[in-house]
Amino acid sequence: MQELELKLGYTFKNPALLSEALSHSSYANEHRSARLNSNERLEFLGDSVLGFVTAEYLFARHPDLPEGDLTRIRAALVCEQSLYEVARQLDLGRYLKLGRGEESGGGRERTSILADATEAVFAAVYLDGGIQAASRLIHRVLLDGAKEEAVEERRRDFKTALQELVQRQADQVLTYRMVGEQGPDHAKVFMAEVLLNGTAIGSGSGHSKKEAEQSAARAALQKLEKK
Image 1 (tube, rainbow, N blue to C red):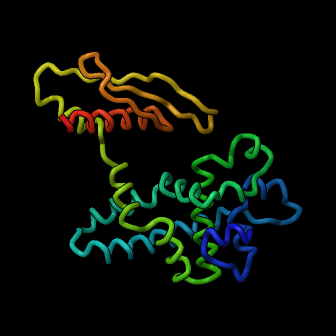
Image 2 (cartoon, rainbow, N blue to C red; image 1 turned 60 degrees about the vertical axis):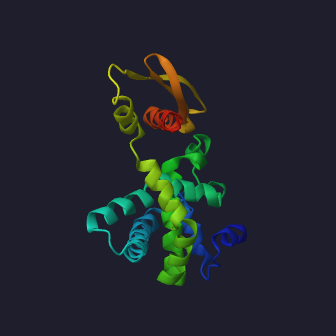
Image 3 (cartoon, rainbow, N blue to C red; image 1 turned 90 degrees about the horizontal axis):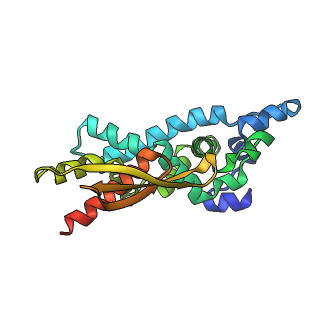
């Protein structure tokens, strides 16, 4: 656990909290005789800690934005995909305690499991060191200008933007097609192309068909906007 503490930039006074944050329900269920707690309660608390810290950050960073915009940006920053990326950054999957079924089913790479564990770790730091310690960690791994821009970019509807661009000329037809997929079921990657009047103008990939199409549309937009 010391290795993970170094990545977190925080040393626990009560290491049992970190251990609990990394214990998936499948592991706790297989070790009921030991009366182990899963990380579900910590995940619940971590969601609120993360929400508060993020709201405070955005309130200070954007003094002129209305409540609706602040809510939208916060939702994008704390979404499952963002938390999954934090978990990957920390290599959190390596430290998870999983039951045999989740282990064999690829649980260490499952987006939802990693995102939930990230929230649980935030809660563990909060309980062990207070809101300032949790806030420092959340700011370091999640809240900065570059990450905010990244999640805003991810939120853009590139398919709609591309459609609006090509419709400036008459008789333009956009179509999308899936051109491949790879990886195991729990971490499958899809590849898509977008075609303008039957000619491929962009390609992309993603963990869902929708995400792959958005990626292809983004590539096409970048290509067309350079002309």
